[in-house]
Length: 85
Image (cartoon, rainbow, N blue to C red; front, side, top):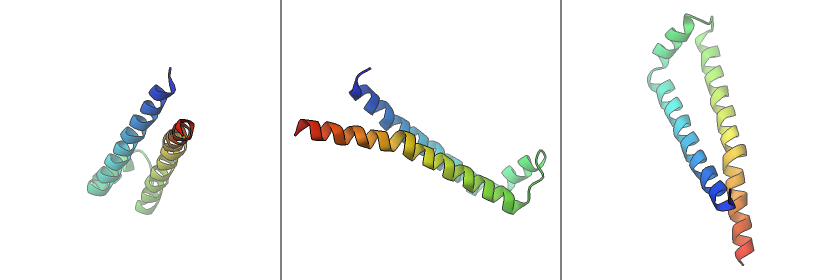
């Protein structure tokens, strides 16, 4: 696999993961009560605990996107740019 292919995979992976994160946020915001009621059947959480867990999950997911997709992509772009000059 060439570095160009890896760079493209990282770029698309970043985009796809951010779309998933945005969908998660919009669904959580728009259907909060329904999601809470649905999960409430399985887990005994207060609304505050439920919100905190989702916020933590989104934060961890976003951090994963940054560390495993965006930063390697940017590093490859920097190396490519410095190599050309």
